[in-house]
Length: 239
Image (cartoon, rainbow, N blue to C red; front, side):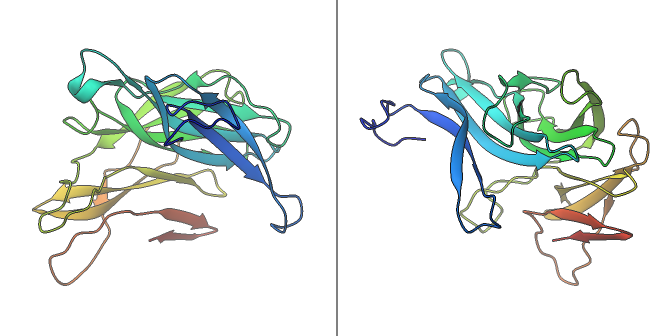
């Protein structure tokens, strides 16, 4: 995004864009293409993430914030949107809303070995981050043309900032898919006055999920947050 107007590009101080950089020589050189460029002062494109399918299709997801009259602090909505490229990031499809509601953030796209696209995110019943956090997964079996949404579990959002701290935190669900197409998800839950990492999985394409369980095992009371997950064969790694 721009802090001031950019005369070289013609974009205003309100410009907000999503870009993807690519390299064909193992990272020695790079070029950049824009997924979207926007000068609408009421729109802010935020928290983007990327995934690549086995067929080479590239998917980028993000929260598209819209501001205006009537919402708290001017906030109206932030649905999760997705854009797709089938030419190695040269051109991108028009962003499509895929979330189950308007108050969403923190999307994570993954692509299963069979090409099924999954996108996790957190959905709130009221303007984001205030009440009623729920983890969801959007699913597409046709390369992103159509989508279904699946409830995963309730999220008890972290207090932000955490007691005794001065920086912003969030619970955000993170998704991973294994070689066997099992879906794995973690997020940080506020439990008993601390932030704990909880884990759940689905073995039926996101239709049903196991009961979330706490996985951190520290010996003293402390907060765990900013988690991530990776699946490798029979192993799961959570950091």
